[in-house]
Length: 356
Image (cartoon, rainbow, N blue to C red; front, side):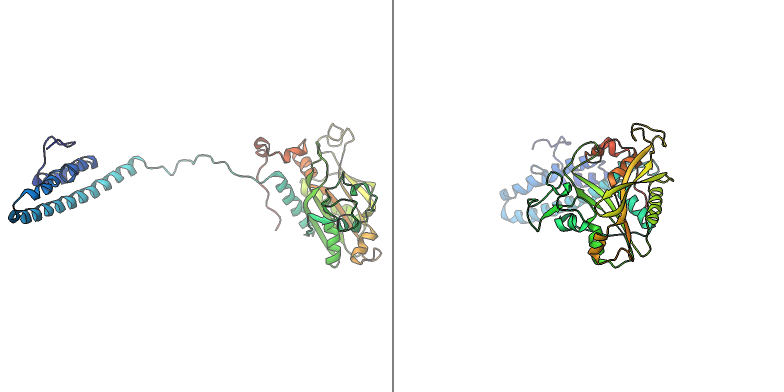
């Protein structure tokens, strides 16, 4: 019989059974199993030689060898369980983790700065009594332009400025990717009875792309319709909204302007955050930054909701979310918000807790 790994001579049953409890390792136990029960093991070969015995001896010898085989298998299994338990204890002792050590730093996801800005805008307006209102991004020409008092010859209705799903010269049922969130105003006038204060924050689309414009951007729209509402109320609401959003009291001014959907209309400027009114490149040395458009809701727009401007007036305003975020966070190029550079996005902290 050839040698078996770990043993220089064949092992008989008694020798093997006696040595099992003292085997120090799983490797030594496996060597013994191979030497006795393996393909060329002692007991395996003896079982193969049973056929050469006389029939009278074969049965008794076979029963004896099978009993020995079973005893060895059971002893090996028992010792294996003991050695595996000891190995597990050793590994637990040597590979133990000290849970009091500081955990390695893990990268933490953050909200996009535009998402943060939208939440801060909504929280500020909610403090002033405004509630969310919604309108579709795919809008009819009627709700996007006509009901907002934009004449058919207005430049904004031409296809070089607006994304149409049908030719802009079609007579009716023209659909556009909304160019402004003002469609929220019209839908609120049709469905909500005054008094109400609504805000619409969402995506809008225009054919433009440069340092301060992108084909897709975000706007915030606000409208208050209530008996006794005046231009002075609008000025006060906007001043307080800016204080809440920027976290400081800002100097503002209103300049006369023209918008088809408000009359009288105005542009609201705020004192430059960078030079405090002294004049710099950002404000083009004027000391002021153009921020948003506003005004009293035009009587033709109020008529969409069947309202009389003499008894139920209202004001409205609209601003670009990106514009507000650029000024608050000091971002020089609007396109940075959309190009997803990790170095740019990592500058911004966690989003604030929105107002309840």
